[in-house]
Image (cartoon, rainbow, N blue to C red; front, side):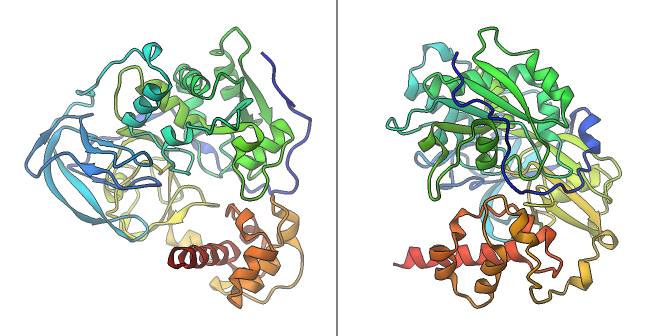
Length: 448
């Protein structure tokens, strides 16, 4: 099995080394109990919201489809627990917008056993049948992208993929859910890799794992096939090593051109949690109803990695882990790229890989939250992994010169890793400014 341009002995330029805070890496995955009420938003991914299949008052079984995909760029949803559909109505989400959701009142004493499945012979399926089977599970990108996995696996035929890159870096501070999945679910990961390789035309696979996870490296290597089609390589621990563009640079020495997809240079990147979930669900035809989530932070009395049913209200989860909901600040995701939560009764959705809860007193902003004029120190330029000039972009954003940012300073190449904001001594919220600029530009495109 040939590995093209393999491991050129280099990593991407720049980047940073924030404190890791990976204390939960040694804690096995534990199940979270069912909340009395589960809230399943019909939109948990990029693309069209799902369409309800159930009615108010209907009893549903754990694992049963409750919403169907509305087109190809859409995924179905399944009942996370056995209960009764209490309502189908708008409900707030973590970042504010109200989304149509299916509210399930869980039966007391409901079993954690999945009661609905549709076993299938994957070997008998052709490519389109296999893609449909992936879609029927409801899986989306679990590394944060939340793009429907089945749609991402349909690579245009004019772009043959020569390497499948499996992202096991998990470079965000605090987060260790991928680490635990590699330790505890390596067979499912290898099974998921086999499915992805089949859909991509059979390219070899490289599993990239940061060198601060030697136990995960050993666990995954022990499960690899003997034919050499899949191999594990350690990569330097550095942020943002887990970004697809950076991992491709490290493992293959290739750079993804601006406004291009990685498959256009022969590389396809997928997260370990996504592939492990595929490998676990597809043979039985089960739906994606729960995921492993890191719960950490100074306000959490019982940190760890929890298997959380989709739709679990955040307030219920915080109570289970001993975090006082009335005095904490919560982030969905990691501290570098995650989002602050605006509504504590919001549900856990498919894209949540981590929940960080901090006591308010532990989050005193630098210099009382104030920003100061740029001092031209160049720290942001030295750290930006994409080689951008965040300082100039920030000044243009302050003047709302968004077109200049995009046309002359490659705003589109920024994937919002947050390194520039992290290193800025003037406390300028650079990445937040870039997000606003992109939103404005996207809004203009929609109106033209």
